[in-house]
Figure 1 (cartoon, helix red, strand yellow):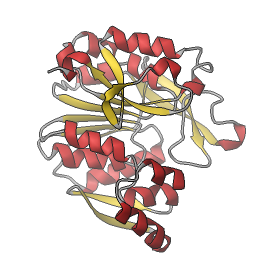
Figure 2: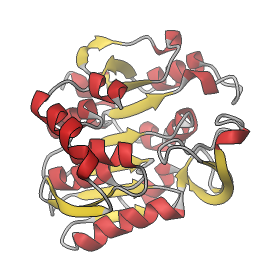
Figure 3: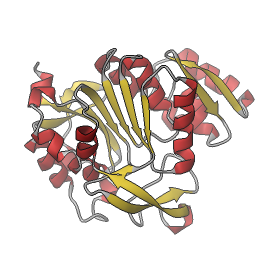
Length: 279
């Protein structure tokens, strides 16, 4: 909790409210965030949900989204969990835009359905599936300790931290984009607990058929420790993205490049296509 607050020291007032008021938050509260009705269910993961309630979760991501997403845009939320970031995105793209959310755990996808149900005038599309480089079915480990740590990387969580292992449908994002004729994608968020390279490879045909200037920024969590488990390397991720003119930048200073081949701990980066950046 304190670690998360230290990462996001942008509002002393919100931090104070968190410490003094969060103890009184129980059960669930539905209120608007950025014009979108959203249910904060404090029963599923109190620490995480309280951070979202006080606007202290992923402040860097939300700041970037507020700059990159405009009314009428399309936002892809990969690893949407219980829908907080999807709800933020829906408020930014408005009723004329679209949010396409992907969450393979049925229990958590049901929260996304709730966001859609509470906001019928918005174009929120819920996909209860994972994203990868192949279409079909796969397995995912559901974390026993944190609703955000579910992963398709085998042996990543450790036996004692796996609540269950379930079979889930898997799709390629480039196929999904083509099948749904998505032409105004302005931003993509990928948070898949180490499965990011597979997700990005599932965008290959989209990258190949989209001009560099039109390729959207991608906020991506990178988990270096899983790459040996998948028999990948950070160099393979870097080389793949550079093939499509994408380079990694610091989420808190998008003028600062990040050498992802040297990352040692989980890091969020902003991939920006150079053509898009210089537009």
